[in-house]
Image (tube, rainbow, N blue to C red; front, side, top):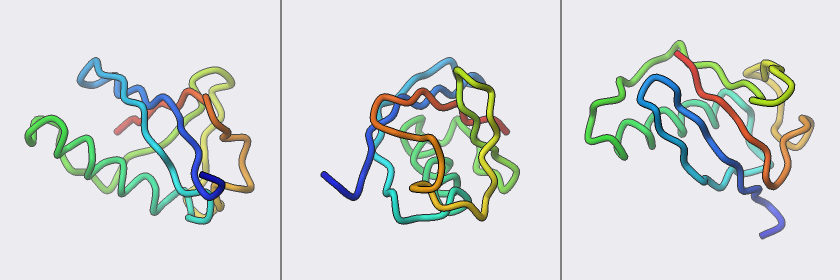
Length: 85
């Protein structure tokens, strides 16, 4: 899949890790919204929906700005990301 990358998504608030595909042609802000909704659904609503979530690289601790396209970041197949509220 050339237009997607697979990453490990860590959600510390619920102690879960997921393997997810992310579209490379979307802005980080849109991806964060999609991830928030997906985790909310995966947990049966236990993970709250939020407009405040942020996405970080688990290794470099880099914060990804909402208006940046994923393709313009260092996120690649196998990246480990953290979703925080």
